[in-house]
Image (cartoon, rainbow, N blue to C red; front, side, top):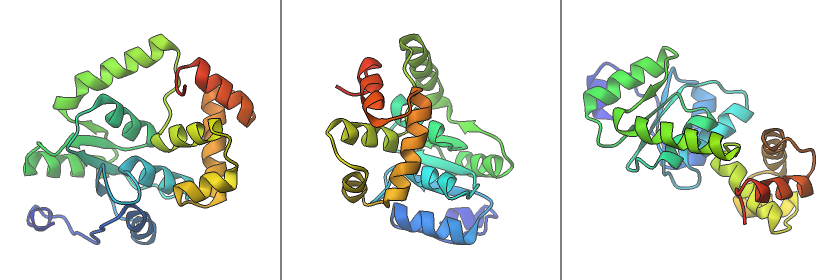
Length: 191
């Protein structure tokens, strides 16, 4: 935080958990948000999804210790404006934060090749790109859980699960849960 303030940023909040980040970002609507990929309660991708569902358009730069292409792809698919690994130095992070605040997209050099490969593989396999939360909900649907039980398992409201279901159905090109499970199995998204 101190490094960001020294670089000329005004830090309006610092959060410990994903749900707290959603709450503070919705309330404060900063020019940009810097989120750790792994936060207690929600990943950065899940925070971004909840902000999107709530109609809160704040550009988010995700930092992660992982350069895993799937993690990067899920963050970007959820709507992240940028993704860097924690190996990036302070100056790179500050420049990236400025760029996402201006509406640009930033992907760290160390993760670009993995993202391109993952996208090529997904397109070649004819597999839709689901967010991390959509993938979790699809798996719970396959286990036969109701919307209410899924909500309880994921510590979200039934309305949030229904919103994710609508997005999931659209991505899979289906209109109901049994078809979503069948299409998810056909595409290799679930077993």
